[in-house]
Length: 141
Image 1 (cartoon, rainbow, N blue to C red):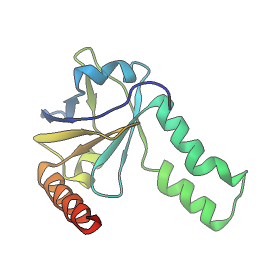
Image 2: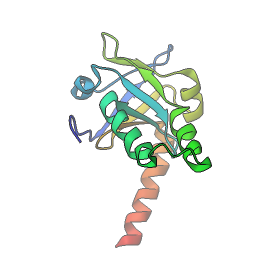
Image 3: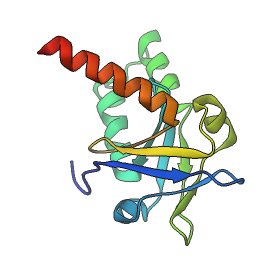
Image 4: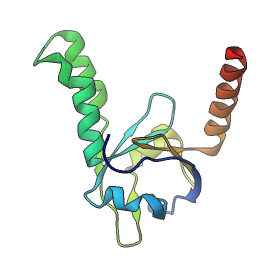
């Protein structure tokens, strides 16, 4: 993985137009734009264009052009919900209305660093995820 390694938790707010500021320390990773997509756990995933391209190759590249039902479903599931975004002059992105609605994010959000991408969470959903993480860790002890 090249580029920035995302980590930490940042509290931000989505404005009335659906824009949210990306943490200043990570804006340089998105100068060429980024890609949003709803994640499987209720968060919104945000990739730099470079890491999105890498994720596409990881998820879809091993198929070697395979057009099986499974391969087509993987493509549809991953790519159909992806949206290109660009930073504005204030370092904000516009989260499409359908993505905000699906993830339940509005008002305050938490931006979580996940290594090669960011996640944008509704605070209550993140609290539930943190609880699940703690229970999982306790089970491993």
